[in-house]
Length: 146
Image (cartoon, rainbow, N blue to C red):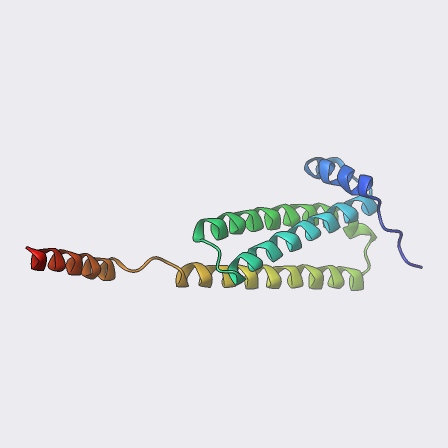
């Protein structure tokens, strides 16, 4: 039987309670809080990749990267709490499934960060040497005009 989707008010309540999840022992609520954290991470990852695709400025990409890292750290804390409460209730197969879920999240996270880091490297300002040479040519042209 399909699990009923939480309402918008339940999601908002869970999001507000996210910082209080250390005191929550209800496995279903913890799973929903973790799912909300994963949705937030996915959304911030899509924003980051969209900014890279349209060649947004470096400051914007760096800010989006910082948000993405923060969202990942938050998801990691939510997942740890979920596992700590759920572990006695899980079968070995379910534990393996949780491990695979986390590995998939980590791989996606590392992939997006690698794309971001490559973009930031490629879009870095010219080296000092090339700036010097352009400055030198400006000085030379000024001397020619004299």
